Image (cartoon, helix red, strand yellow):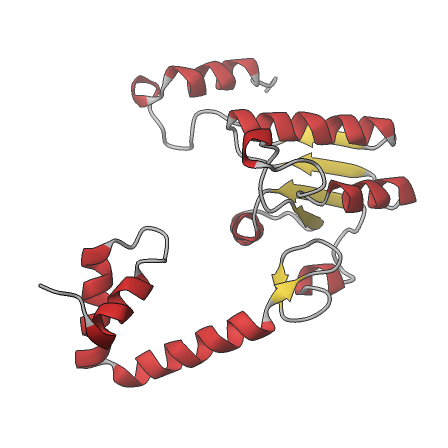
Length: 198
């Protein structure tokens, strides 16, 4: 089937989304055009408004349509505890799944010299200014448990030490409900090294 014309363009455009291949994009396009044109129009309008109006929080760098996101603007949250995450998606996940009532700082990546991502690209100068101000008492390092994520956590931990700020790393290991026989050796090793007294 050739993919010329506006329909082909729509299918190709939908392929830009993560996890959406040509077949999924084709199903989405046909669904919107055959069964749900009104929602397709709403989707297009919302997408345009989001792209035009959503930027970054001046304080934590997460996505928001205001100068300060709802979390940073919320006075009931603890401004002295900051959770460091790699992406705005991590903020959503942690805030929905935990009782964390502090603030966040979004790196938009992790240290990766091969990809041209150093401390400046991650906004660590802004984080260091906040650490130097004395307003932060504790950092919770919630970067991913990849080699780059661990290196990033270590680097930020050293920044925290320099400013006499307590830093902790989130635990990694066996998931709730997981069975040991199905856990990979790296995860199991990490779980043993991070064990705690009960």
